[in-house]
Length: 416
Image 1 (cartoon, rainbow, N blue to C red):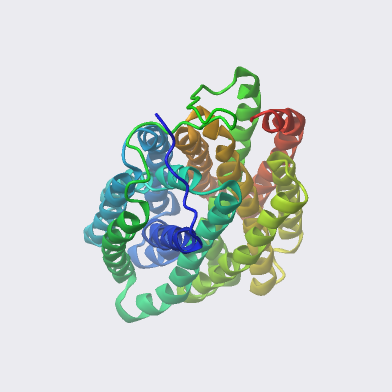
Image 2: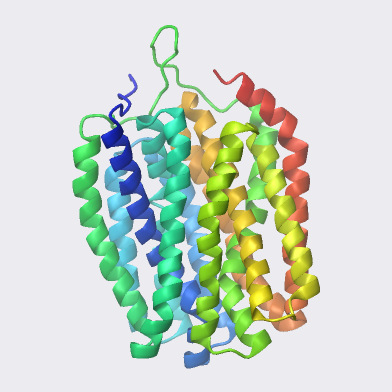
């Protein structure tokens, strides 16, 4: 099958990137709102940490496992429709979660949300890789990340006010409504931009010399490197989502602050992430082309932030929030390199969506470990033990990425 045309007009390229950003904005609204209001759920519903976090764990597990299926389907069926189904389904679960009265019911509904959420990212990566030139693709994945960070900022800024006015359940109603609107916008906008460009079957890359299709399988020589990447991504998930989910609770308990103030403390990390990830993208594009070397550097900085957290976490909410934000930003930079930049190199195999799904699935293995496992660690051994877990994850990430740098460089050097 011949590859689809690339988008050449800047208006179309910019329009597609903005549409991706809007989808990911709503994707984060309907996925991360539970973690944002978790501290209020714990306060108002009198659930234990492990009971309340079961919904997060279930969502992360369902999301991670469904990434594999979504990645497989994203290379074979219309990705536009797959994304629309995911948005609509996630919106529905957000409208249902406020009606649940027990942790078990909330966990069941949020697991379904995880399945729906998984239908967005791999098909989106396939569309970006298929329709955009390499430089535009790398710009697009950074901008898509912006959409997620802006969604997180919006949640942290508005949730305390909504909670104070009408309770945490209203947060889910509002997010679900926004998701329904975005589903309609996505269907209309993507049809106008992508109509007639994307084939229904697997994407295969043309050879430069002959312009012919040349599908393939992932080379065996890169499989050990992929193993190191997958393990590194699991560790990144423990850092990124573990810190993001539990930081408001840490601030609330350590400094005896109200849930609304503690939730607001989380807004700094996504604001800083926009600039950090933008800089991280520039580093990879202009100076250090090897994604794993860049990821090792990001893990190193995250480890440094964790060391400072262990030493100065009792110095006050401002210092702790700043250090938490640094650790989150560094882990998001590692995520950019490992889950966003790496899949593009598999375009010639026609497996961009599948590889993206596999890598993103590994992220949420780490997320599931962090949401439930860290709750158990905190309840049994305290917050200092949790900080040491995050430090160990960051240091191991440095080691894994560092060991695989050279082999990954050889693979990307000869990919064409």
